Amino acid sequence: MTLDSIDRRLIAATATGLPLVVDPYAEIGRRLDLPESEVIDRLSALQARGIVRRIAIAPNHYALGMTANGMSVWDVDDDVVDDLGAIVGALPFVSHCYRRPRHRPDWCYNLFAMLHGGSRDEVEAKRREVAALLGDACRANEILYSTRILKKTGMRLTGVG
Amino acid sequence: MSRAALAPGMIDETDRKILNALQEGFPLSPRPFAAAAAPLGLTEDGLITRIARLREIGAITRFGPFYDAEAMGGAFCLCAMEVPEGRFDAVVTLVNDMPEVAHNYERAHRLNMWFVLACEKPEGIEAAARRIEGATKLQVRCFPKEREYFIGFRIRA
Image 1 (tube, each protein chain N blue to C red):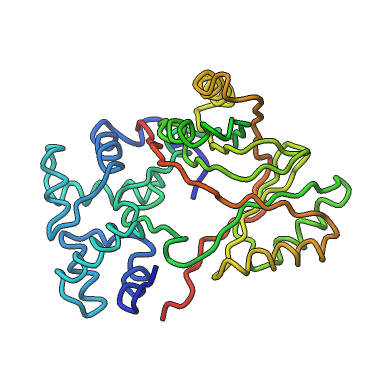
Image 2: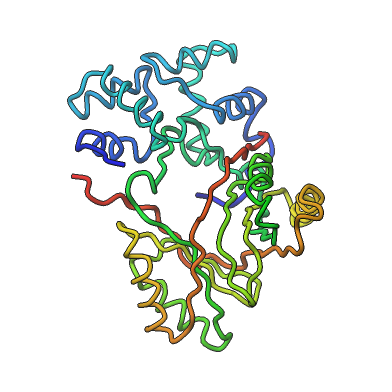
């Protein structure tokens, strides 16, 4: 995927979000000395390429009461993991869902899904829901709760200037 | 980002409607707030004012384009280590000192330290993992994304 220097400036200019003015794309254009139509066309092209996933609001799920979460991990048959992963990922309480390599014999899990809920009990209920959904295709599962944030930094985009 | 729940009454029904609707997407057009406000029964200015307030009180973590960090050329990898309890704090310092370590969580498991490596190039991941092994004398297990599934995550506000 290649981005030209204008794309990179556009990404940098929207790194903290859209300005809250009636014409936010024109406002970004004014900052970058670009016409509004080019800002819109470029964002649209970036969206078509999957670099912009979506333009939307991300509610703070903690603020809205979804204060519990756990990283659930599942040992799912390789033949069906992609079909089932797609189903698990689409659940409204799953925020990340990936297939990752096993590290046998210590780690047999190949499907990772971050589960969210209003409480630890609710997260456990969702884990049971996922287990029921996976059925016999899943041999084992665990859930790893975080006990401490040790480091959290924003993603830095280098090469912007 | 605050990890505390908002006090009851901080947001009303209209705020909830906004949060629910704009999670799904925001228009990419010259007057996007006007377009988004109409189906919610709000004015353009009314919607802007409410979003500004929701951001101020911490009900929103982000409003705007969501970028795929990998599509932009970065490389990321989830990694885990089994850290002996007596060395945990010392290992935290060594691992967190690495600029490639973006997030790091303690988790209740035998593999008790989980972190994300973020590098400009894919080759950087392996090198960073080996450097952490060298510094800590502990094995770093890498869990690269083999496949990412579509995410349907939504908060019912």
